[in-house]
Image (cartoon, rainbow, N blue to C red):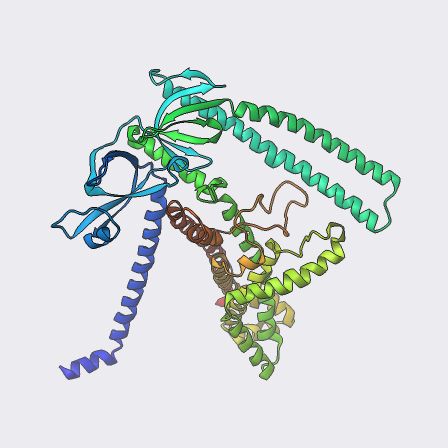
Length: 556
């Protein structure tokens, strides 16, 4: 038996099983993590049933509660007793349920824990509704009337009450979109032009080049823009009056009657009355809103499109910067530099740079790029905008450069490894055929090493897209009013701050005052960040595979 074990050990088979086991465990952990994130995050958008029940603690009056069941957990009797909750003798644990009760403007809380044992007369009435509002979160209750300019349009006895309500919501949303278009794009474009004219006049004044003709031309353009602005302002005022026209009267389950302006309503639905297809359609609408809309309610409602856009834009800029620098550095070190002490020292320094904490890169980026380089650029090229900084403040450009610096060692090492794997005979054969060293490098060596370059880029993209710490210092913000790419000159605003998915997760998960409401969004945003990184990596992998097939003949 001892001999057979030794033979089995010496055959190397244990290492095969060990490696296979490690890979299997890793795959299971990754799949399990993704499944957990997906279930916790994407389940948030499903229209959950609204439960209504009597909640009666022993020794207290019964009261009606209503809300979506968010979570359940078994709690030891001792813990409930210490919290002052009446307990049932003879059992060890009691179940408590987390309800999303909404109506924060009435109760000051969105969520409430209730002991399931004290819930009675539980039901799911079809007429109870959930209203998504632009402020104060969801409202749960019953629709009683629809009003127009304070006059009753439809009451509780009207069979068409719900349809009228939905039509009025559609009307309000149309007006909201018109207002958004004017405020965000039309007025934004005018303000951008006015600012450009102001800076143009200031620049001419600083250079003592402002003539009366130029001043008159600037004034004429300003007057024309101001006239356009006043027209939009009048149009906007009419839209706002029309926007505030309709309102509804609603009752909460605890008997409070309140009036809600439809200007504050995003959507209203009755989940208990919806069939499966209606719920699927609602789910798709909510998921699309999440990936395509702007955030609301301190990032705890609405979408995260600005964060997706900012993340992708920053990664693309970082890739454009880091790839040529990394490849050039690797080619010089491998193909041209003398392989001596200095070269070895540089390689050691590059490898050590990969282990520097990312926050250190952020501090360096803030000190060198923002405060030193950016301030000097402002002094030289944007003096007319001072004392307001243009590039002397954190922004998209400095964030991209800082992350390019952070990922530079990865690209250099990957490219060098690719260059080292090219057989010496290939280079010598090219030179023997009369090609110069530069021609050999450009037409033979670099194409054969291009898959390795793409591998370095893939690793760099994965690292950069997930970094948060340095970005907090050099450009990312909680909420950016506009995207870094728009229709206003110069179209790509490298000096502008931006939103990032990683920072969004940190902000919503750890800085939000409404933790329970933000928790599902943390999972959903984390899943989306993984998907964005996967898409970027798969794009790079596809390019790498294409290059590998294209230059496969050179390796023969």
